[in-house]
Image (cartoon, rainbow, N blue to C red; front, side, top):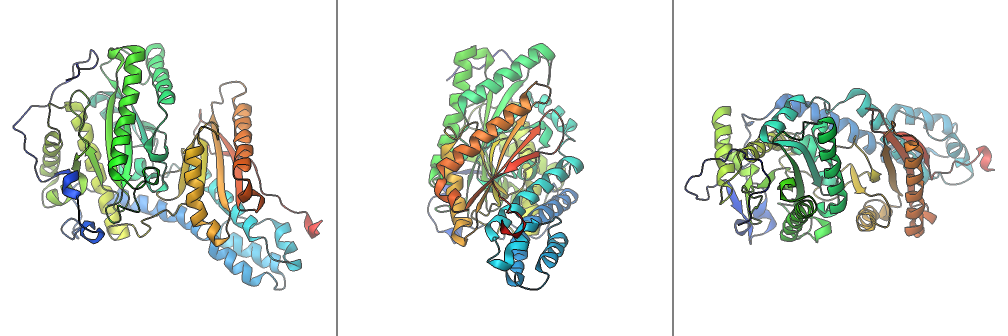
Length: 511
């Protein structure tokens, strides 16, 4: 057994005779059977709402989802209508009126005015509309705070009480996990550091560097709490799987192999911990947590770690099963049942603070299970990819909706090539096969308090745009790839700023 990490002594949950109760699932339980057999049963999806669910918050989140996705989904119908009308009298005026009414912004006037001499440039109009819509939702996110992301004081205190001073989560870059923080886990955005990567395979060196900055700030500034406080850095990986079609709709980065997604996520977590321990001694260690997310139902499963941070890869606590088991209980009894399940979910002694944190995530996820049940019939109709654009770079604090964005976190195209290639492959099926371009938003956030930071962020973005145009030159030259460069000052809660795009607007008259 590994020696206990660090000098911090946290309360140990009481031990008890171990037996695997019904709510603790294992990989063996999932072996065999067809997709229909794995579909959530009516026993797991009853009509009644769970006592721990938050219907008010669910309604708020659903309104936001409808508003944002609806804005993107109106683009194609509007352009189809324009295609039918492009040779009608007064077409530019009619088109602008329709765009304002349905999309909320104007279209490039020269493109409309040139339509009479040939075909309307639908590829350019499509990219323009996607980029304009993205900018509008960014503006709204930072002006209205629709997800209440800055209202995290209570949850931050809960984190400290559990023994953690920072929560760093890496979900897979798959767009079906873009909502993992605000929806599936219901964590206030101000309380978490989120860095998506394909397959949830985060960069170890980059994460160690962020850990160093966090601990340095604790020592120098006492933020988020003083370095002598008995708290730890919690690194979490969220991999994903499909309960309905596991062989085809799992993680593309792992070939829809759930076992590989689990083992690769845990291996990356352990490599991060080892890098910290070897570089800064065992007393500088971190806590680790592995979570799975079912992209069909949004139900999570948590691999409960023991006090040494070790967790079984083929055993977990399943929120969907706990939902069914606690549906008929009152809220207090349901919480007690969940807490017992979490404690029983590990074969060894566990950490009380970690158990409390996991139990809270499961309780939060119960609201999301009800959300999917109420608004999506128990499982999403878009089981596969249905993202609206690709996000590339560093940032996108405002993107928290399922299947809205495929995100590739990177500094350079060379280092992020695997993530980018996955995204381009996905959008080649979603868009290119229909003759539509792949819209890519290149984004670099910067600290406005640092001299020259904005200029360097723009330069980084220009470099990435040029590299992408070169890497995917065939698509770009055919007008099937368009890029938008935006930057944002992360020192302030402000929208992104559009710098430029690859869209070229012709001069009036076609000259």
